[in-house]
Image 1 (cartoon, one colour):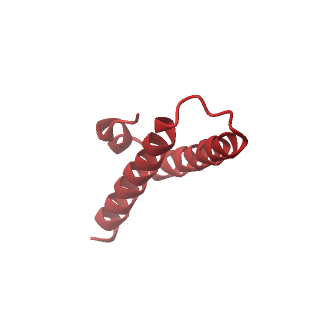
Image 2 (tube, rainbow, N blue to C red):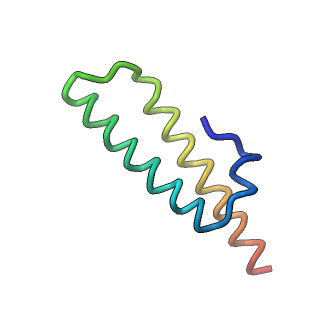
Image 3 (cartoon, rainbow, N blue to C red):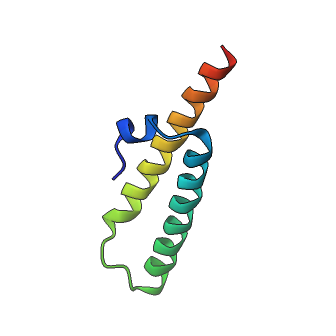
Length: 67
């Protein structure tokens, strides 16, 4: 689980990179779920929330740049 404080110190490029990694992990977890190999189903929810956190921080940083 990612902490918002950790995300706030990252640059926009680092956040984009983190977002790509999280989406890849989410894809892999969904694939595991479909094939019946998923060990921790709550991990999918956690990844989705981490993606939302990253997107929120990215949007707030973009808004600050525009202001």
